[in-house]
Length: 225
Image (cartoon, rainbow, N blue to C red):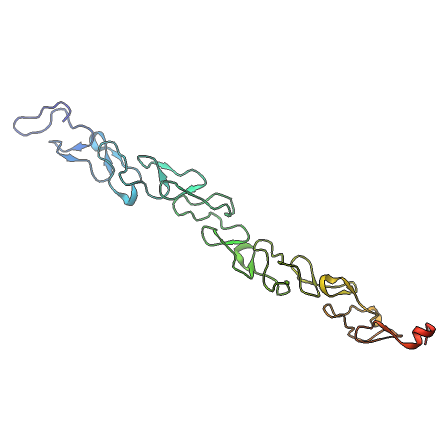
């Protein structure tokens, strides 16, 4: 009781109850998620929806995910989540460091190269890109291994392929590893096989061999047949 006095017949407190107490005789603590004077203040987000301290509203066992402070009324600031806001949002969220204050799930998904709801797992081997839905090229030097974000092949390309993703055949009369070998004298100046350099439709007059790099004897001796 506030005054220390009560009705001598009923025991009802004269002047009401002190903070944290209720009923006519002020013999019951505030409950039901309430605290304070007249039990008219709501508890914050206490862990597991527990009752806060009946007088001052403090949460005895900490806060639910997404809240912090003695009374658990302060929401986590941007970049933090979880119980007492002690965990960092992933920097691989679409908006780096922006996540659900309760679960840590990234809002809007992940940056390229990352997966799971918290965007804390890199794409598994062989996959890359947004939502890890792209396949690394089978033409990577280490087959199926590429950068999880860009798809760039690790260790370069297998013979006959070029570009960072090894998704383009050698051309412009080049073939082989890194496309640094020149095709022979293919018929009609056709592109040779991008891997082994063989000519598909034979050689220009005066040349022979699978790759059309050998001049015939008449050409070598007389420069004409």
